[in-house]
Figure 1 (tube, helix red, strand yellow):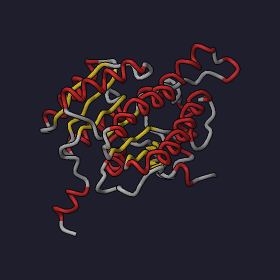
Figure 2 (tube, helix red, strand yellow):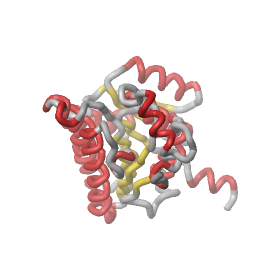
Figure 3 (cartoon, helix red, strand yellow):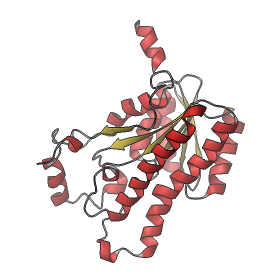
Figure 4 (tube, rainbow, N blue to C red):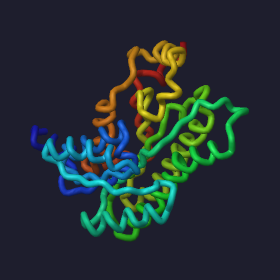
Length: 261
């Protein structure tokens, strides 16, 4: 295979990628990677200032993209988002669901309000986005890629993050269900599973004692860096490179899941 063919295999030229949570550290890096591969990226979040910084980097590298403010937990917001993307970009081909929140509250102390907030953003938001964009993909017969951000805690229960683990476990299950449902429509649904990355949502959880335990369970002995998710996300996004990959949990964890003691 020639070098040009390899580049074409991972090219996203002419495609539009909607990245919900794209104003955050991890999904922001993924958005930059998609833009470098030729996609127009739509950063979705609540903080225009964070989006502006990310868009500056994307534009400086010659990429294209813009920001849309939306609440991922509100179906009306997501429908409006899709309408804006269709009007401005002509359509959508890739959806990344990466908005997320976390909390280290002990199980017996978790208030209903906190439970509802985490489940609303981490699980309901993914559910609603898949409904809104999935309907659009199906009705318009668009071969599409949906990438849902899972978590190591969605595969292996983790202490101190009870509601977060529940919410991500549901995302993993939903992704496989939709992969089965939409495979005949050429809509691929996969879960990108980060190991331990020091994202903004985890700052309160990553106390020194916790960090030591994580490092003792990670063969590579370090946290992941946001750029190290880009290659895996690019593989899952590209119809050319991963046309027969759906329902997969793509783990990027420095070996964490391969180790017991």
